[in-house]
Length: 240
Image (cartoon, rainbow, N blue to C red; front, side):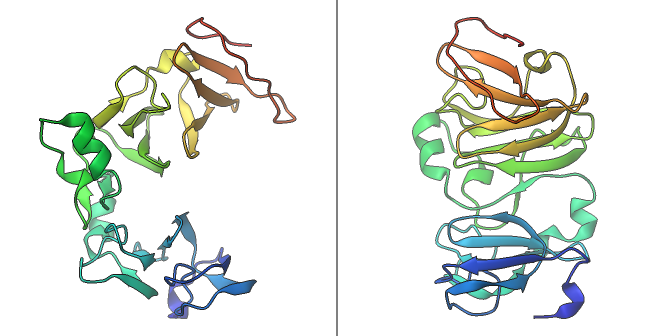
């Protein structure tokens, strides 16, 4: 590993490594933590990291094009650079998506309309509809994506099977702006994505869990101990 790429804050990895997803240059399972690069995102069989020169580095399985490199690469234990995401490109605030994991859901939901390219590309593809905003952070769940803008807005796209993207449409092919009134009109400072849910932190430093069901979108401020009892309601938004 090139030690010149190591950032000041490092991450250690361990566990299953059959596709080289730990980013250690081999495919051996590891029971003891070992130094890896600064991790941005991890998946079941892949790891995405960032170097200190603006690179985006990736390793692990490439079965669905999730590494963002040539389709001829089935997997890699060595860190590979995603060449289309160099600093001159990502500094503009563009959002790129790659991998075919959502292509099947998109095809079923959008038929007979064509599936947008960012759901079927094995290399980084610019997500349409975000060219007029400055993107600040991105996150993804099992089948959805979100983008936090510098102005505190949240754009969402992908599967809405569990109503995690609000609204009634089962699939959003393009980014849709979250109605800020669902968060009390506040700007979002931070956002995190679970498997089928989202958690946002507003400008008043209050963590907000957006709970979605077929009947309700509820706004809940979490208490200091982090625990909250969630219950069904038919009201549209119910602050505690």
